[in-house]
Length: 340
Image (cartoon, rainbow, N blue to C red; front, side):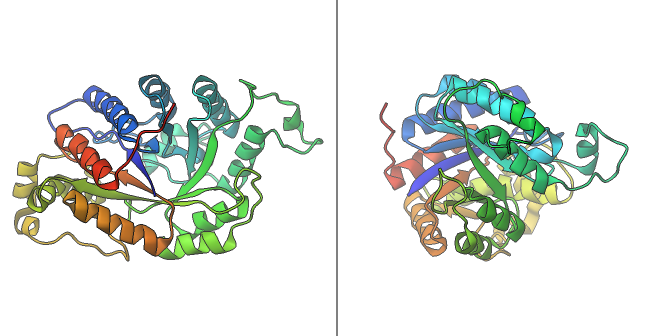
């Protein structure tokens, strides 16, 4: 079982975005030392609670701060960008950190409709056409240098031109993304922590319909991304979760303030704070408790879905508690740092 990290660079109430980015660097170093397999950073726009709108910039710093762990975007929101520009940025990262870079791409906007409008270069058409189905094959063709000979883009020599390249993942939380990943022969990451979705059916659909069109990936590779909080006691883990619960409720109400303290969450949630968290999906979005309990539950989920890798997101107001959670989880899974 591979265990990985996805970091949204949360900004805690009372701190600054600069501190949140320094926290991301510190957590990446720790994940590298502990033996986590990947470290992905997210893309979110105009959200004060999350400090990462430009994963490619942050990854350049994280590569210099780590030695072994794979680094990637979780993910680049491709509809905002030219496929060629995305490929160039990630080829630079690959040149700097060979065989360590993942290019996770997604279809979601990563912000509000107004944020998306501000990111568009052509604002004469609203809404713009959904051409993700064209963008993604174009990105793969630029990356793999396999445009047809009669295509004008076949004459473009993408730089930096060197052997290999980033590993492309398709991110999503729907049957559409599962189908697209299967048809293109790409590894697939299901973002279950964002919204309760059809994780079981999407991953099963991906596996059943997978086409080995990618020479580097002959068999399907699915990964589930979900939340977890570990602490020394169950009570402490559930207490830390209160900040996340209030943050998620606020997000649903378009309230994007920084991550609240536990005390603020207790006041605002009121009697809801003493009730078990809602779990409307078929699989828990957050697994919370002692290291042994969380490890057991995560293994059950992985076995049920037949996934080879879990990617964990942990959001707490207290950064030290977040570091400790990942440390406890690594111990429970008996992770070993990669050699080299």
